[in-house]
Length: 236
Image (tube, rainbow, N blue to C red; front, side, top):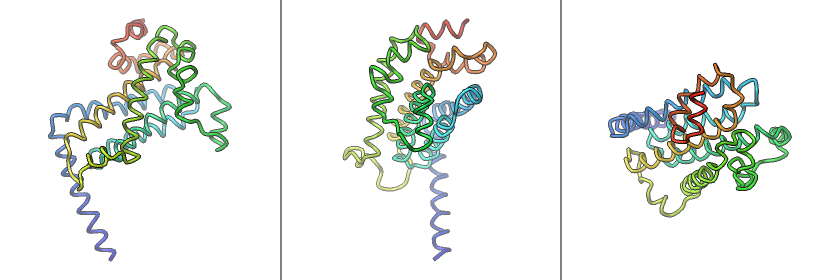
């Protein structure tokens, strides 16, 4: 029985290798690599913030981002979408709790959880004008667009988690490479990356010294270069 189980997982691992090869042989190879490189950027953000803020949730989010790639490149697309939603949730929760020590302590003690609706509340959440104004007032009008992106991403990834009928039948009935699902997942990853850099930049960039900012300025330019007020930050 034990040898049979072991053989099953060895064969499974061989299938994973074939799916990885197919993924990197697809026309999305460079995009996969570029988006995965964001792990390095996230780790740099973490390095800059660590010591100033509790980064427990940020570390969890980075791990989930990496797991999303592991799942997608192994052909486990539903888990890749699940991990991507969890990454988005954790990043948004981290930003929200970074400004509320009491809620953070309650969360750590298991006294209080912070609902998604609270985090993204249009009047008081992390994309609201009043929140953005406190940290980066020049871009407070960008919040509504970012909220729309985050809400759409959350809703669509949730459909894969909760078994929406159309999403269930979209899933292949056997393990293998699926170009359509890979492309859809990459779209989600790119959007979550954009949202993440926006949130981290709004929340922390003005607290960085010039040498610290220089370590993430390329990441900010790459993602937010189309927003004039972020360009002013990068060129200061």
